[in-house]
Amino acid sequence: MDINTLTHEAQSAFKATFENDATITAAAPGRVNLIGEHIDYCDGFVLPFALEQNIVIAAAPNGTSTARLASSMGGDTVEIDLVGDILESTPKWANYPRGVMQYFREQNGCTLPGFDAYITSNVPAGGGLSSSAAFELAVATLLEGLTAITMDTREKALLAQKAEHNYAHVPCGIMDQFASAFGENNHLVLIDCQSGQPTLVPFENPDLTVIVANTCVAHELSDGGYAARRKNTEDGLAIIGKNSWRDVSQDDVESAKDQMDDTTYRRSRHVVGEIQRVMDAVKALESNHFAALGTLMDASHTSLRDDFEVSCEELDIMVEIAQSIGTDGGVIGSRRTGGGFGGSTVTLCESSKADAIIAALHTQYESRTGITPEIFTSRPSQGARILEGTSHGKQVLQSSPEELDPIG
Ligand code: ADP
Ligand code: MG
Image (cartoon, rainbow, N blue to C red; front, side, top):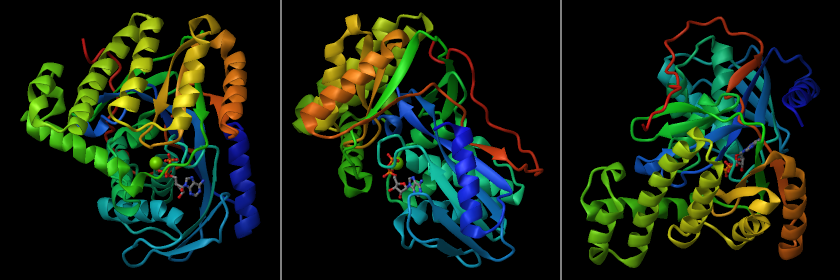
């Protein structure tokens, strides 16, 4: 479903639910990470892009001091009182907008007008494609429109991350919210997670296609596995005795091996290897050396599976199928993507063979697991924005991505 259809759907559902016309529509995309996994919280580099798939919210002021939210995912309309502090509550899905609304008010020193909103989406929820960041950024962007306050893009992404930390209890790094906020058509968003600087890397070769394959195995990020990995990396860095993973070499990891348990050692080996792979991937892209990029993606998967242990049987099967199709069949590289322990894989392939690859992934995955996957292609697309209805608010000096070689 394209963005226009989704927008239309949001606006008609808004009208059916609230018996009124929406006056403003905001959208924010999910993201897929090409390479650089579980290192956004380790001062690493990551290379995601904003998907064509979005969360779209149609809304209108309602003249009260209450926000009323409904989602196409179902459930009753949720009412949120905008007068006092906005606290966590049920249903859980409304905690994303609750957190964003609370911090938006705090950070901008403003009040929020009462409003009605209807949420639609074609970002799979819980599929490792960050529907949560898309949701947060769509709400933050909607609030910009409703209050006529335009936030700096970085500040808006950080606000969304804070909502994810404190209202969804996922201690995520900055990748998801930065990709959803800073995404541009035909560009990957290289994020230096040490400096917090995004850099746009052109990705417009029509001969290349990115396939996203959702294994449809659910994952839970707040159940401890993610936080445990963060702890492992903090322990590793402390034993190595450096302040930042960016200053750690694979030799440093080897030198500290005897002081670490095997788990901490393997986690550390992943972090250092993955940071290097992202830097190599950017160079491979810049020199149109796509086979090298594919090899790096494959190596990333192996490291995430064996050393960082954030894969699962279904992800391994999906990657195995892609890798077995191989370069002759048009597959350049394949790996699991996202912070979770289920979710999706990302496969880089030759555009002319994409349809055949999708068909093979679908059939073989289904026959091996009994699960029907959800598979689609996506080009790098635009980040969070107002689609309809304008905000005439004060303009702020925007932090904008660079567009040059950041690594040299
Ligand atoms: P991911 O970010 O990988 O999709 P998460 O578990 O972080 O997975 O976020 C998924 C959660 O985000 C859902 O369980 C739901 O609470 C919320 N969410 C996502 N999309 C929507 C939507 N369209 N409407 C309401 N809530 C949504
Ligand atoms: Mg998420």
